Amino acid sequence: MLWPGLAHWVAAVFLCRVASAQYTSDQCSWRGSGLTHESHSRDVEQVYLRCSQGSLEWLYPTGALIVNLRPNTEPTSGASPGLHACIKPQTDSRGSHLYLERAGQLRLLMSETEQAHGRVQCFSLTEGALFIEAVGQQDISKRITVFQYELVASHGPGAHLYPHLNTGTASCTPCTDDQILMAVCTSDFAGRGSIRGVDTPSSSDHSSVAVMLSRLFHQKSGVFSWGGARGKGWSGRLNTPLRCWLQPREKGEFLFTGAVRFGEAWLGCSPHYRHFLKLYRTALETGSNPCHMNMDTD
Image 1: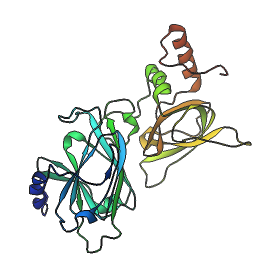
Image 2: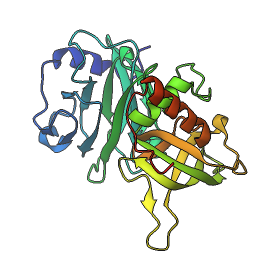
Image 3: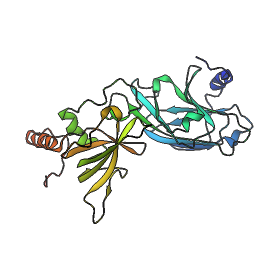
Image 4: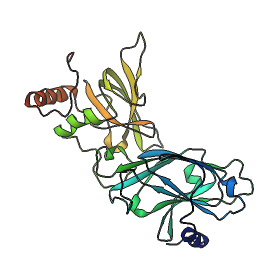
């Protein structure tokens, strides 16, 4: 469907396909200003981002941007059918509407008002390029469009950790033994600990699980923090979709694994620790363990 009032962009898209944005940019992130072509309010600039994650910051938006998201391992001809992009705008993001553009057709992805909620929106790269249209304003001095993006394979490792991906997969299916052994090696964090509480904000689509770790095998992005000299271990919070409800009264220790998405930790495989320990020791005996971990004190 071609949205009313946007027909003038269609011609501009094809006429300006070869134009390149002369802004601050690397392979992962882009930062630019609409003031550089304010007199050409219908200019369409091309932006190419070739990383699995990054950000875009457009100060004083005017005209439009076409953002081409591709990983640097992706062939130049077309996008992988299973590859999705997830966009998370900042709550103070203003000045533009976000669309998907394909073959001259524009489909609204996120309005300026919707961006203020800061919710993640995902789409398949086969649906088109990200088209960012500046909203007409007399005063653009306080208008800045800012968002983060991440690329994920819809059926690849960790896809279930994106609750906003509508892939039809069962996100809460318990991990298999092989998945547990792989998760402790490849996840963004892995630790041994217990559940301290579960909070569910009334307006949220996920729960926040407070955990305390007696042992932290590895982490990135500082998900867990040490309790200090008087602390009993590492503490942190893990998100999980509402449909994957964890009961705080569940006793015992667990293996917590997962991924960090947009700066937040999402829970992945989380079996009882005694079950994981049995799996790992059996894998060591048979030589089938995917990685080595120091379990001397367990």
